[in-house]
Structure formats: C-alpha cells, structure tokens
Image (cartoon, rainbow, N blue to C red; front, side, top):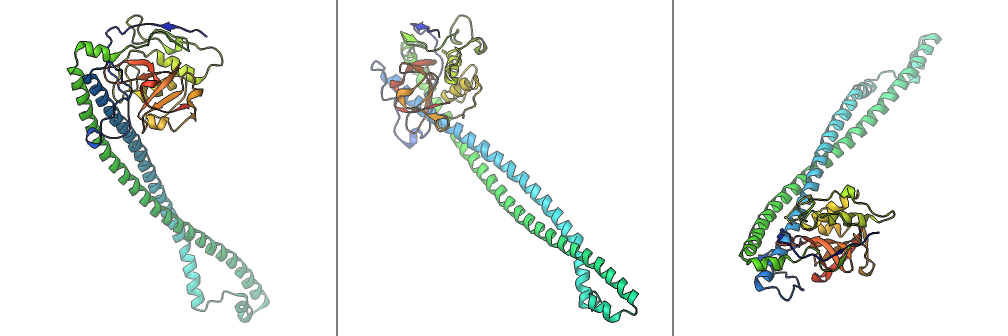
Length: 369
C-alpha cells in the first residue's frame, strides 16, 4: 500500500466549514467552546469557534428534526393507505354479510311460523311412502344448503366485525401520525429559524476578523508530516488538477470499507463547509461521512448522533483508517479516522475540509461500518 507524506501550508483557501452539533442555543445555555483551541488564537477567533460550534449544534438539530419529520410523514401516508384498505375491507365484509342475511332471516321466520322443516314433520304429514322419501331427500338438500349459508353468514359477520375494528384502529393511527408530523413540522420551522440566527452571527464574527486572523483560524488542510494510510489522488481543494474521481482511486486487495471511505473523503480536502450540505462540492461533518461511505456502497444515517448509534462500536485504541470518530456530549461532530491520532472532517466556519488532531475536541466514541 502506498503512503504519501504531506507538508503543505494553507494557500489562501478560506473555505467555510463547521464542527456540527446536537443541543442548545446561545439563549439556552453557556457557550460551548472547544476545550483545546490553539493557544495562539485571538479572542475573536475563540468567539468565532464558540459561535460556530453552537451553530453546528443547531444544524444537527435541524437535520434530526427533518429526519424525524420525514419518518412521521411517511408513517402518516402509510396509516392513511391502511385506513383506505381497511375501509374497503369493511365494505366488502358487510356486503358478504348482507348476501347471507336474507337466508338466515327467512329460516328464522319460517321456523317461527311453524314451517315443516324437519324429519318428524315429514313423517307425520306425508301421505305416502314416496312422498315421505321425496320430502326426506328435499330436507337433506335444504339442510345442507341452509347449513352452508348460515356458516357463511357467521364467517362474513366475523370478517365484518374484524374489518370494523381494523378500520377504527387505522383511523386512530392515521390521526396520531398526522398530529405527530404536524408537531414536528412546527418544531422544524422553529429550529430552521434558530439556525438562520446562529449562522448569521457566525458569519458576522468571521467577517470581523482581520485577514491574518482568518488565515490563522483556517489553519492547514493537512498537518506537517502527515502520512496518509491510504493511496491518494489529487484533492478537490487543490489548485491543480481539479477534483479527483473516486473511481480512479484503488485500494489494495482486502482493504476495509472504511479505508475506501477515507480514500474517497481525501479527494474532498480543502472544500468548504456548508450547513446541511452533503456534497459533492461542500459538506457539513455528517454529510461528508455519509457521502464518503456512499462511495463504497454503504448507506449510513444522515445525522452524527444517528451515525454513532449504528455500525459496530470500536475502542479508541483499536481505531482503523475510515472508522467514524465522534466528539462532544451530546454527540455533535464526526470525522473519519485518518491514522496516528488524526481525523479527516468538515470542520468549522472559516475552515476547509481538513485533517487535524483528534485531541482538539472531546472524544465521545467510534463506530466501524
């Protein structure tokens, strides 16, 4: 397997990024700063990092609310379809029930009026042996037909009762699903509004930085001395060559899916962070990891917190290239393990998709897909 060494400074590529998130707003609690910001960062840069993280938290909330709404909306549509089917079944069962009701009612009426419908009556009132035989034969046919009709009526009645119960349950489920979707839609609109407020604050703070502060804050796309654990192509953020096609990049036989995902993500170094973006030319953190795994044929959830609940748990000392690494509590950021204590991630506002040390953020766990 090939290994490449990088030692490149940032070349004025000031792509937008973030540190994506999962809980409160500025108004609902204290700022959530990265506990290991560079000691050389100015106060303005620290404030930007804090605002960026809070905006990413809300971004993850918006993504989670959207996913919940989509699920509830699908459940609503499914419940409404079941309600329609239950209504059709009820009408069909009631039709079958009515089909046999006439026979049952007629038999009941005849019996009430003293009709001769049994063998004793035939024996007592027959005028000749032949008439007796004819009446006995007719009674056998009538008995068989009557039994079938009565049984059919009983079955149809049972089906109608079950269909009525199913229709009632479907009505209740459809209303519950509709109410849940409506409530989530209100919550989603609120969170989107909050995200707009947060991102506006981040961009205003970023615009207030001096050019030197912006360069300092962006940092390097690849740290000095970084050794790639997977073969590399030209990254999309590089000035020469343009985006590399992931189909042209190959791994050694037997390499893991994670290594393939990491290799795909390597082609996106230097691209901008955009809230809610899933590629191919901009990303948020969970959008990048989802995109990378999609390139190797693996579907993973959209939101960082959900990604942390899937796959296989991996201990920190057993990390392999491409494993997903999660940060903060609640989980609000994710990147792909890039070896030697580094991750590749869509980082934060004013920073490009980059490789940086895991030690810059509070570790929360890892998963392997």
